[in-house]
Image (cartoon, rainbow, N blue to C red):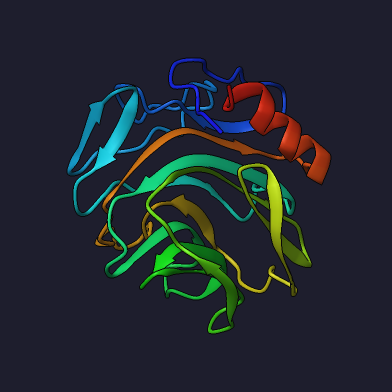
Length: 205
């Protein structure tokens, strides 16, 4: 499939944050969840993460819905080390859920602190649309609009947690080398068909 580079997605009523990442990490949903750039440049309508990246503290547990959908187009530029897509945790590092798009060459999901789920999916250096649908008892993971893994476990275990993209919100020292664009966070449960349709409508030629 061929990805479109310039056509953007339009926020709707259930949008929490929308980051086109064409020239900055501002939230264009007008919910003011802007990111802070560190070691990031912008080229070819994408954010280029050069080493350590940016942390977007989106919303805390008291107002984040118990169900949300996250989409992002990413291209990993190295399979060395590990690269964190998102982390939902408290300030002590206890996680409700997180996902590494690369953990030394594989993709890993976590739900509740210390419970790693090996997906059996290899990481690669191609550009993909990655999607997650998270609710109170499971996380569904998609690549290019296709469901790849469902992890069933209660995730709502910790108080005062915050959802952050690409980094730890309380210690922004993750090592990131990839490109990123069209990041969407919604307070909605997207079905398998909706995720696939979203991919076809906005990102595939």
